[in-house]
Amino acid sequence: MGLTRAQAELSRRMWDLAPGQQFHFWFSALDAPGLLLEPLSDAGTARFVEQLPEADGVVGQAVVDSSGQLVFTGPEAVPELLGALAAWAQDNIATIPALAALIDAGTATSIGDGIPSADDADILRAPALWASLLKADAAGAAEVLSSCQPGERLWYWLWPDAPPGTPVVVLQRAEEDPDAERLNHITERLDPDGAALAATGVCTPVDDGSLQLRGTTLRSWMLPPLAAWVTENVGAHPGLARLRDCALLQSNAAGRITAVHADPALWVDTPAITAPGTLAEAAERLLALQPGEAAWYWLNDTQTDLPHLSLVPLDGDPDGTAFRARARRCSRRFPGAPLVGTVSCLQSGALLFSNSSTSDGRRWVSMVAALMDHDDLFVVLADAHMVRLEGGQIVHTWTASPL
Image (tube, rainbow, N blue to C red):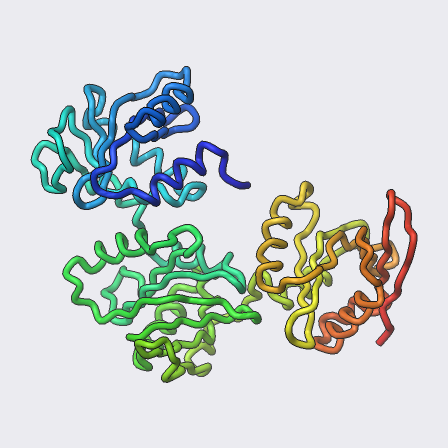
């Protein structure tokens, strides 16, 4: 589900915080929108008054200090406000990742003119309250990895000689942390002195779902500790198996790859899992369809001879919300004119694809044939049918070539 208008506006403001900015604020942990921020200007004041909820909440002003952290001021900006903000942020950060910008926020009953200093003695801060927003552990890494799909980007921080109890790798979705601010907050707490021999950069899932970590400070010796940590923790956190057979792409300052570090022998004790958004997942979902069940599908040509197919089961996404998000991601990876619709499993076990576009069904036949040639798992497509619908009526039918 996407952000509400109020959540999207709050998210934009939180990502764009800069020292010296001033805002009106309203906060209530129990009522929507939770936190309201509007610039301290004529237009901002007018919007604030217009949007001010009827529910009771804490009202005051906020200013961004010299370190880029919010300071909430006013008679109601009491110490308890920080605890309520931190708890509310923890409950909502999965929906609004930009709430990470609240980390190390402060309160003050009043504050002087100008940009307040980050170490102003009149500002109350409670860093321990925000620890849960910055939690970095194997469970967090597994959660990010289990859902990442080809075409996405992750930020990573790899610390091969991390002490016991500390994750060897920290990952954040670039879409949710565009400037890597949350990642930096986490790593600064894990390594406050900056003494760790760590590597950082971009992690990218490729078409088959395997991961590539790219960075200038990656070295071959970093791979064995990563594999050992995954092997130790994958039983409790299966999503870590996405790191199986990952490659470390060492690059120079110009971005050119100078070395590729990979070793399949390191991963023999790590189970292989199917990555979302891959052809392997599509094949598994087709095979799993039982008579009477259906799935949304997206099918299109790519720049290779192999088309791309992606499915989302209908029973878990009846209104197509998750499917539309996936379709947008697929269209960014493979632009063009996709075939989109539903695929149903008939009582006979045969698959029936429906499509309401005017696309030539022979293109569907060709793409299905290419999938069957690619992987034996797609044998389920043999003798599948596609129908084109107009006004709910079947106007044309095509049949896939048998094996």
